Image (cartoon, rainbow, N blue to C red; front, side):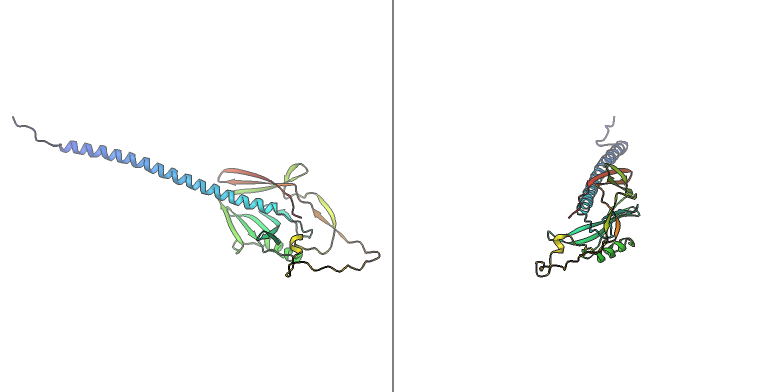
Length: 241
């Protein structure tokens, strides 16, 4: 009787190869799932970090609101763009006032900022320029994509109101104004403001004409819809003086 030779038969080898292929496929699926989860976690962390950075800039702009008293409103929202007149700082010191515009364009949250100015006419020019932005300006920064919708509400008289509605209006005298906050307006090239000679007194100065000016709200609520999720952020408005 012939003895069977040592080794594996062809069927046994094929079965072993099939088993090894199944184990390898299962192992690869596990590794691929781990890699995908790691990439998803890293992307979520990066997006959260970016969102926090953008919201920090948003709060800094609102915390530096400056009402120059001119015809340029310190805060205004037209449904697409929020315009802010804010104190600009450089090297830790106030360098003037600038106009900032936050807008939503094709799902991208953007921010435009003009250069610091110290004259009311220059701030008025920035206000007009902020209403003609195309989205490709040098000062335009793309901050956050994937924004489906945004809305801004003003906190007035103890409740949130539509930012596009008229708020509290007061009558103020009409006259020349400066766009510079006191710290910046007092600075000169020599480092200190020259003494101002006393103005001659008029016996009966004519009354200045009055104009309407809307008061700043007490706070602002931001509502962002990001890829199906809603983010709400409230911040108090304390104008710089």
